[in-house]
Image (cartoon, rainbow, N blue to C red; front, side, top):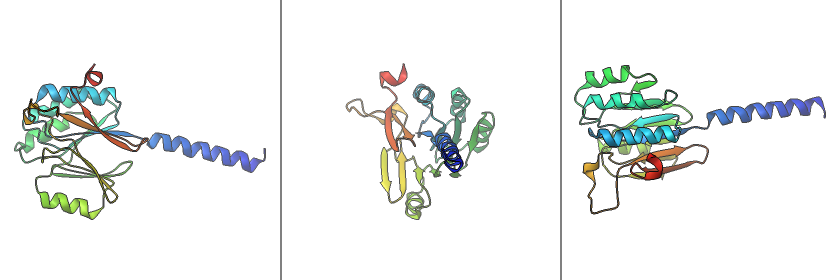
Length: 201
């Protein structure tokens, strides 16, 4: 084998290794509204599925809910924004400061990770629409509407996991609280039912 071929193979292997390191998995959660049990179920699933980042699109309501996210595996980075039902700004900030690998993004977050990610609770529907129309983001994570959504709009993948609090669902339907898992390697986004036995064992 020629020296140039050997060098090319080494370079190719190096870039393949870098690409593998950049392949990540994220979790999205929203509108927990003081539901401790469902939040703990969601955190357990995030840990089991070995996500790299968790984004909370807000409405914790009681700031102490944020403290539950200390149970995320230490390798997982946690991000959250503020919603219309989160009046205690100082309490929220304090809770985020107490969690290692956590970042409070206030009302809107713009992150350049493996992709350009925007996080907004969705309080102002016009602003939500403008963020989407801007096409500035590869992934836009929203909450507030309590309507589940995984939709590609132009270049932007819109993720809204819907409410995690059980009180927003009728017992007469099969619908229930979910989180979203986005897998960069498979290029897929899927709802995960937090009450699914296989995901909470």
